[in-house]
Length: 150
Image 1 (cartoon, rainbow, N blue to C red):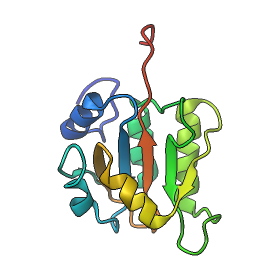
Image 2 (tube, rainbow, N blue to C red; image 1 turned 180 degrees about the horizontal axis):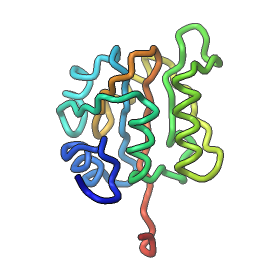
Image 3 (cartoon, rainbow, N blue to C red; image 1 turned 90 degrees about the vertical axis):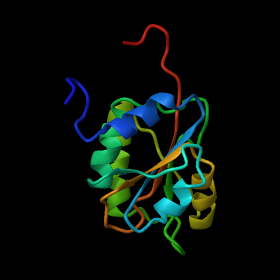
């Protein structure tokens, strides 16, 4: 245990978050996402896990991970097939965590399912959660930490 760091963030996840640079993508995926096969194609090349609900994982990650404020797609969600404008409960819960972490509304863009898979393959890494609800898949683009930040 470390003081001030969410206990869900294990050593492998912390190492990956620290190694990522500005513009790198992080995928947080539900249990149905093809996480292992996609993770093998990422920069890290292996799957990371946090066995907790998606919103809890996002809250933990965003406690340390800055979102990129230079782009419009720094926070993204996988669209429901055939219902791109529908936002299921799991995505609503994650949206609340994003807004809380950023201290302001920060809407996610929606990404079509197969386009999301392609974005995930180009990501730095994939964290598979214990989220069992469908469409609990998200992409987050890393921003910068200013020189005067604590």
